[in-house]
Length: 125
Image 1 (cartoon, rainbow, N blue to C red):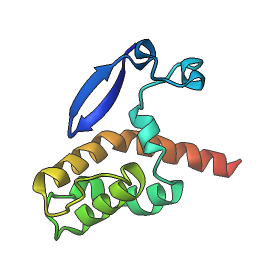
Image 2: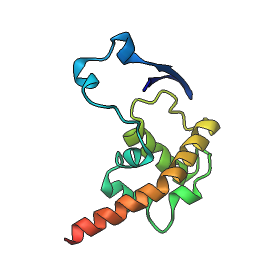
Image 3: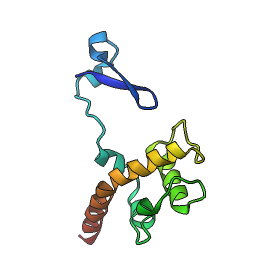
Image 4: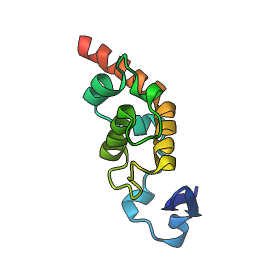
């Protein structure tokens, strides 16, 4: 299975590092799995999910890609704090960047809710 590296933006170049001999031995011994939406959702701490994202005012649903929007500011801050801390294009004035973040959070929302329910059940034990 080829391993992809991110070059810039959404461009992905697939390179079979194992065949090129560029992977260290410890990575060759285990199968690398692609990151799923659930893995990405798990990067956000439970407290942030419960107290900032999954609240009645629903910042994910109400965010619009404008820098002055409080929901957008919250999503933007969470995205670059937990999901993509070393992200290069973290400009809240970039409408396309903000729209991408909103879209990603809308895709993550079912997984965030699932993790919140699971966390609540574990806390009840």
